[in-house]
Length: 147
Image 1: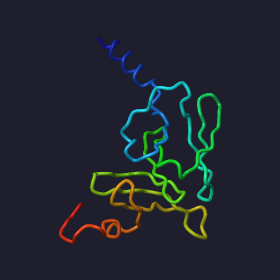
Image 2: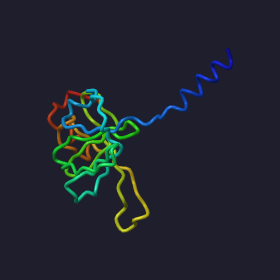
Image 3: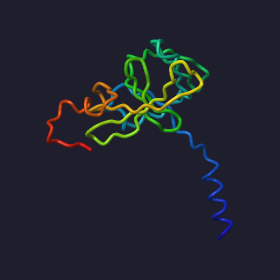
């Protein structure tokens, strides 16, 4: 019995834990399952905040340029959700249906070796991103508390 449990544990732990990379074209596609294709995405790279394109690598060693404006975001190999907004990518940290919390790491101006984490908010998955929670909830009445 112990050998069986040990074998089962080894098989489970030896499986690749990386999730499938996938592009998301609309926010409603987040929960949709991707069709099983032979040309799977292996990685997605941003070419910087000034670039209009993402580099999408597929399993057949092929690179494709995808316009940032054409997609809503993507899911990376660690199953993290990223939203494209104003040619930058923000990681979706929390979404509860009432508001969305994002995170991004920024460099300290004048000190390129130091960085800080910045929290951002929006009312819905498709609305404007704000650095202030109250501005993001500006369309709600004062008596309506979302948190």
